[in-house]
Each structure stands twice: as structure tokens, then as C-alpha cells.
Length: 168
Image (cartoon, rainbow, N blue to C red; front, side, top):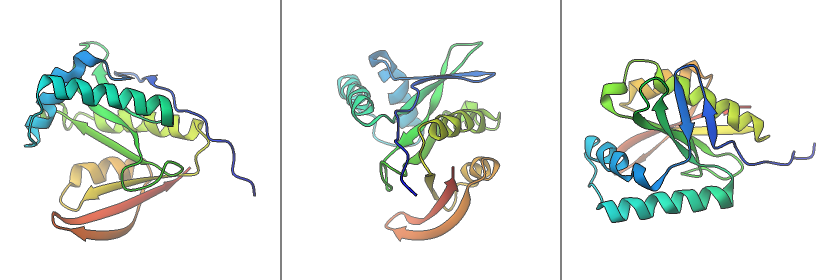
């Protein structure tokens, strides 16, 4: 059976409570705060802006991207969700998401990831992957709700990494 033509994903999505959109350079402030919250080294504002410009450029080239997540009513940035090559491939990308802690346990990650799943289906891809650290129960709950199945594990210097897959 021939592979269908893969088309770019939509970079502007809305759900009942959320707006997902392409990164703007001014999002560097929120991006830096999100990195700091997870304990990562916070880049300078200049470096964060360069990273976001690079994300936009790669999105134009690849047709996939991480998108910002904002609550529609409040308009505030709460995280990101989208498709990346990551540890997988352009044809079978990974779904990735990260939210500020204050936005956890409210269903936002599931809502955003479901919108990204629909956007991935619209690209005519056949499969999505996700890689999640074994300790991250919240991310596994999101993936379970979206119909992902755990496939296998790999290990690195940070521990076990669980690979999950969803046929589209």
C-alpha cells in the first residue's frame, strides 16, 4: 500500500479551554520560567529568543512543531504541546508536552495533547511515539487516555525511558 502524502500540521488550534499556537519571540520570558521550574538551566533572554526563532524556522521547514498552550479565558501561557522528531523520526514523530506545575491536574495536558493528536491525524501520518521517564505517572495517564500503548523501554544515564506508540 503506498504511503499517503504527509502534509504540514496546523499551527493554530483551539479546544474548549485552550489555544495552541506558534511561539512568538516574546514567549521567551515564559519559556525561561518553565525551564527553571523543571530545574533546567535557564538561558538568557537573548538565547531563549534565538531558540524560539529556531523553533519557528524548523516548523516552517518540517511542518511539525511544539505549540504554546494558553488558557482561552485567562490568556496566560501554561506550557507547550506538539510534535517533534526527538528520538523518533519525521514520518513517525513524538508527541511532547510540558506544563507549569500550577496547571497540573486540571486536564489541560490531555486536552492539548488530544488536539495535537487530531492535528497529527490530519497530516496523514500513520503513527506517533512518546518517550517518557518511568517515574512520570502523570504523563502516562495522559498517554493512556489518548490510546497510546507502551511498547518497550531503553535506559540511559538518567534511568528508564518508556516508549509508547499510537497508530493513527
